[in-house]
Length: 212
Image (cartoon, rainbow, N blue to C red; front, side, top):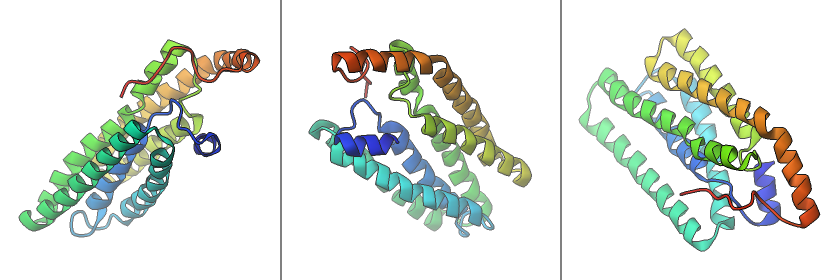
């Protein structure tokens, strides 16, 4: 629904690109972690995060198409920086580190940081929700799937006894739950604000904008 709205309005409005930028680099890191040369027998990690990487590319393309020029350039430069970072990390780890255990440890630690940043990315949007008392620009399905993603990977990590997956995803589960609770708190006030704005012909929370 969020990206259909962006496509239909030909504008990203106040939707933040940062959760999608964080997810893009996070998926790239986990693909690197799961390849046989780094962490053997992790085909599930590679396939799921590879799919996620492709989806994030589509989402970010929409942001590039429908953002203002200044914001578009900022997003583009961040994407280029993330690609350079992922490529450099892959080359350095695969050429300078010789054992699977050491590669897994190095990439796994970086993945933990990336995963935590991905789950923390919507915090700016949560701040907007609290200030505006509106969940209009905090997509419900993004919050829901963030929570379900955290639960799923936490369960997987417990089965595999993989601390690199367990630690960030257990934190992500808590953050996802916090977003859903926030959504429940301000859903009714959002509907009321939307009804008032429709009567006045306005769009978006008054006087509230994202920083970044």
